Amino acid sequence: GQQLNQSPQSMFIQEGEDVSMNCTSSSIFNTWLWYKQDPGEGPVLLIALYKAGELTSNGRLTAQFGITRKDSFLNISASIPSDVGIYFCAGHSTSGTYKYIFGTGTRLKVLA
Amino acid sequence: GAGVSQTPSNKVTEKGKYVELRCDPISGHTALYWYRQSLGQGPEFLIYFQGTGAADDSGLPNDRFFAVRPEGSVSTLKIQRTERGDSAVYLCASSTGAGETQYFGPGTRLLVL
Image 1 (spheres, rainbow over the protein chains, first blue to last red):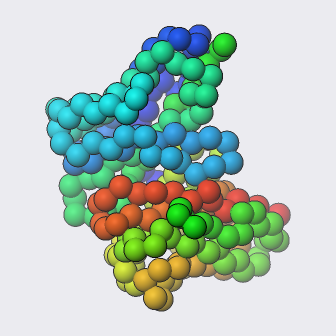
Image 2 (cartoon, rainbow over the protein chains, first blue to last red):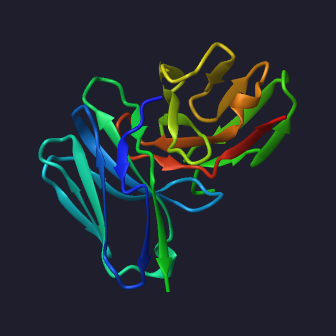
């Protein structure tokens, strides 16, 4: 099935560093979501974006809805060990269906 | 409970058998989604319900897969004649309405031997 392109695929960072990841689509989306998934669990919603250009924060997390409506970015500031996990973007297109397309995931590992 | 619940949490079956996976959405959520997640991949859309009806079943891979939501709350995903390739985590999510934020359950891990 269709999946969005996320990058980087994985990253190792030192505790305290900032992290950036992005997600791109070949089609226009009108909603972007960012999720975090821990092993053995379902994805947990971090941030939801509903408007092109929107910049939203949730604690140390900041996400932006790209102005082209074909991409989104997630930044994590001052990473801590519990940030470890897999981060997924998800988009909902304007084509009339309400199914969400998920990205391939960014696997984050934080070194203490 | 307050969140989406799924049962069983794990299911091991033999090739060719029939399985049913259950999802209890958040109370009051009218929209319900099923996804399949293979190892190392993101969730892949299967089907979405608005109330009792399947509003979009374009993600179901073939006619061995079927899902119901007879009373607009609990949903059951049914897989007939299971194949080894059906092994995956099956995730359920619910939302207050179409296009609204989805909240996921913990998933059912299906292993077909």
